[in-house]
Length: 333
Image 1 (cartoon, one colour):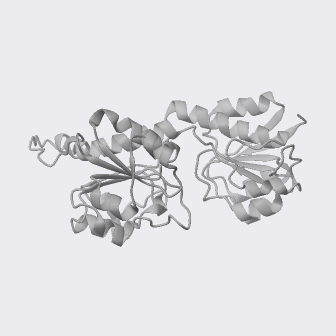
Image 2 (cartoon, one colour; image 1 turned 120 degrees about the horizontal axis):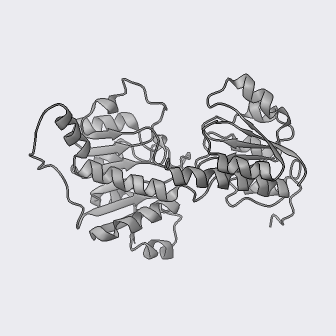
Image 3 (cartoon, helix red, strand yellow; image 1 turned 90 degrees about the horizontal axis):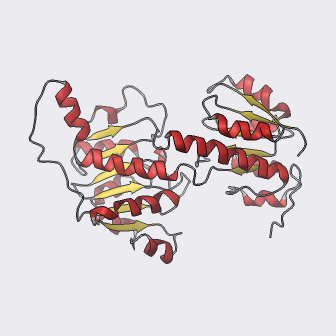
């Protein structure tokens, strides 16, 4: 492979993937997270690849990078990438597929457990010198119903994690095959039926126009008053204003939220003021093992495109028909 340059937009990305790029002869330029736009604009002028984490990849940025062939997301979401412009220019967009799926699935289950058992509230009480042992509102998992919205890599792992609790699992995912659902020991359900039946609802779909505010006022109103809502996927999936109202009005019991419509979360955000809510800082996929895996997969995706191969998960497969930037060695059909 000839010499190439890759811009890494966040300095906290693990070295394992960067070392892989360097071992293949790449020049790796690492910017600090949240660098000024001017620094990023200058860095990409002669870049062949970009490893992007939290930065927004705009049309303006892409137009300033005439050699850019691939935007490799360090993660699984791609709503911060101008996909249409990438495809038009011949730039492949990839995600880090299964690299953090286990971490997110475990975190979603941990959020369910912490919320059901009042662990955060009990900890706060002890720290405030309140020895309150009446935990009558805590919920057992055994025999409960788990509703999973989206049976992809993470949702299917979550379905399997519940096996020791003899929970019933309902899945809403119009794109999942019957075989995939059955292999997880789950049953297919329409969204309304799932919401009306489930004791726990966990979201695991990407943020698209189709899924934005998939949980809004009507959906929250369908849920059990005892239900617990968990979101470790994308903030825009939930209408946060509607969620605040639903919690205040007792339409659902609790929520555990790792992702928000605007991040970082504002200090005065109403969800942070509600006792039945657990809020964390978009950290579900942040384990040592998953961060290493993600950096390696993101690097491998860059190398694949530079060789003319399709990466493991190509978000815009239409780009294979565009040879303006990449000399694809695969047949797009």
